[in-house]
Length: 277
Ligand SMILES: C[S@@+](CC[C@H](N)C(=O)[O-])C[C@H]1O[C@@H](n2cnc3c(N)ncnc32)[C@H](O)[C@@H]1O
Image 1 (cartoon, protein in one colour):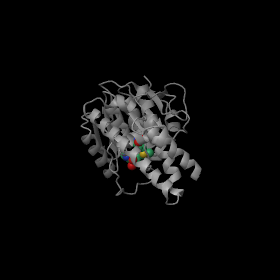
Image 2 (cartoon, protein in one colour):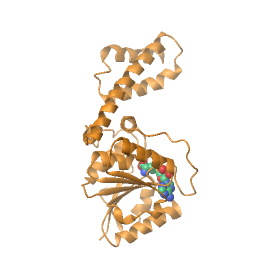
Image 3 (cartoon, helix red, strand yellow):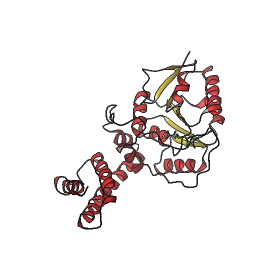
Image 4 (cartoon, protein in one colour):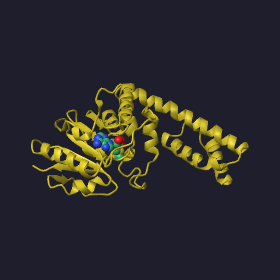
């Protein structure tokens, strides 16, 4: 363990300059340091590790702020999304988080709500969709200026916020937990996003007429999911739209006769469905 940390610190101190490393390498180096440092005894090696850690974090903070400023100018999507490809993080398991999640949470000024109420039965606790899946979804959806992406059960709002930052579409979140909604609204305001908004309430009460794309990361199950799908089915009788899903609710959506899957189903990817004519 000590040898591994020593080699890592030497590499970070001498072989590369943290200031010139790219963000991904710095985030991954920080992850490796964080995994090794807790087991270290106080001493010279730990002090060097802490110093390297501080330099990496300071360099990241500068880059995160630069991306936030670009977002306020309407140019941040390219920086967040830059270099993304479907194969990018293909080695990661479906719902695992990676360096892109740390990039997104470093850039988006989320609060850390701790006053969260207990959820009613069938309502699923908050867990964000891994960022690489959100980028993959946005790439495949190719949203335009007239699109409205509605995340049903939006939590802290990653999906509508990334849609608003990275595309010309409108991102909307519907979330039952008020403190998550407050955090998402504050984030949109801090980034001066005029194409993202958040509604606090039960997804069953959503105005389903406004979305061109609905997204569900298994926010609820059982009778609540049934009721939302029935409302979407009624809406599908009036017009065409897309429904996207991640997690166990995808199996339920795939069995809906009014929805048609787009492309081959893949368990490790967000599923996209179209309404049938
Ligand atoms: C698995 S998280 C998904 C978060 C977000 N969609 C994402 O992918 O990052 C499910 C969210 O749904 C919310 N939720 C659960 N039941 C709800 C309901 N009936 N109406 C609105 N939101 C609900 C939870 O509070 C939680 O934030």
